Length: 370
Image (tube, rainbow, N blue to C red; front, side, top):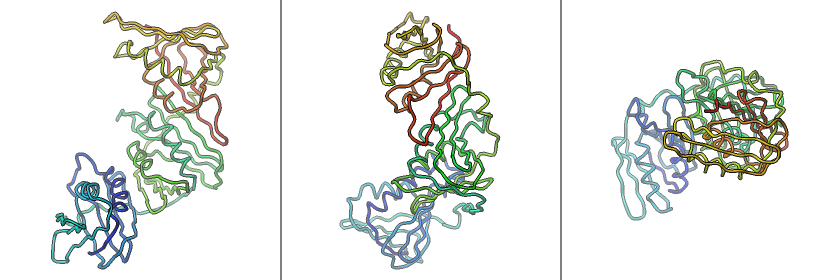
């Protein structure tokens, strides 16, 4: 194998690929990049058995070949090299990749590329195309709400449902739920999938630009194509909860408030909350909301009052402050609405207005006032 390429161009590909490498790989070969040169196209593959990234790069190829090298060492080397043309040489009878720069030479041991795991075949049954920006919004609005509970496999990923004119992203951990819908798609596809949270985080990292992303999926895998990068993810084989059944519809108590003011207040007040419950209490009256927290174990307490618009019965309701802070941090509207029915039923946190063809809904469970 022999080729030359810009160090910065190659680095961009290896940074994304490096994020797939597991911290404790089941097999040493999973720490490797598989490099395949065919003419002037270099194909880079990396996998952790659950997620596989394929990426192609234009190079000046001189001699085709296929090798496996330690990904972190190669990526770290490229990070440390100033932007310049770099030559890569692997002789047929050698087990070393030689990296030549303007002022240095580096030798990186190669592994047996035949040990690299088998790459999933694209047995595609359905396909849909959506804007990259919408895919990123769907991921960023929902990923934080996934569960870490291995006993609830379905909740450890984001549920994506594709219908004739819309795509919906949903995530929940049973304490909070987020549902993001985008309406402006046109497809005859009707299907769904659950993508693991780690895989989807890698997809979000790899997506760039203003183009479109093509989502091809089967019963077991999803293949997400953007430009010259494709990501294959093994799907979670489980049934997602009936999320529509838990979304309350009759919420007569409605709070409208400046999002940043509420977020900053919660951050301050939560410092004084009990560290095991993170409980904060909202006291709602007409045009004022009082936020309070206390930790009886250490005699700590705090409270603040904020102006707001509130219509409904005077009430006191408690939440886990960590959940509210996470949700308000994801929302980007100037004002938000908190819709409530009773202190022991699920509440809805909504942006005051949604962008055209989009809808974002967040549900949070209250906690018992202590």
